[in-house]
Length: 305
Figure (cartoon, rainbow, N blue to C red):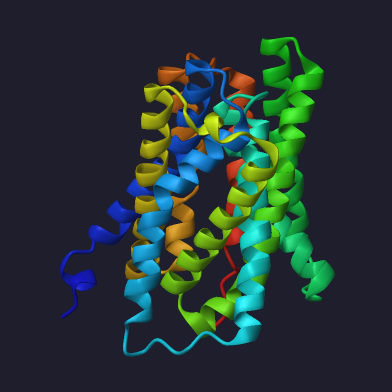
């Protein structure tokens, strides 16, 4: 009998810890911005540099598997494009947006990606949008409207909140494009090799961007910022990626994605405790609406047997 049957708690534990790690990323970014005048490109470059050795090791280890087939040229081309869109551009837009909005609003806007995937799949893959999907979209975006209204009321800076929310929403769109295009490549290359190479190529793209736009001295951030970036790389990038992959393996993608619904709740609580972000009744209602909509759109209706 496999470990998943003898220790059924392991899968959910990995999923919860993975979601907690991903949720903690926005907190660390906000702490880094508060610690020193560091810009998003330098901050993201430090995060990727600290995480790159781990993904290089993962690429080497996954490539040694007897079941690993050579990666075909067409898959290298797709990996290159998906690395550009999915992690370089998406992460950059996200880090830029966090300059203007709270960590809790950022996580909530990013959490819209399943609804965006539904729309993209309808446009590019011909998948129908059902009444259930429409209801989910209405709930989700009504919840976002409440959350944005809360942040505008608390900050008194509607243009900054609009800019930050727009940047993070663009990040969610690019990440959704990555998800729609990743499936066939993962099926041929395996998830570990795919993630490792996508992250490594994203690091290359970011390195080129940094070299063109910033002096090398920009990487000489204060020790506190370096420590936050190292923690971001290990605890919010490498370990959660592995933990969520293990969770999907042990409990299935559907159940793991439901646990992922805890992400905005985790960030809301962490933001209040660690950053002093306020929580209002309207914001809680907004979170509930977004969670309800995303869960609706993520779960397939049961089929009659």
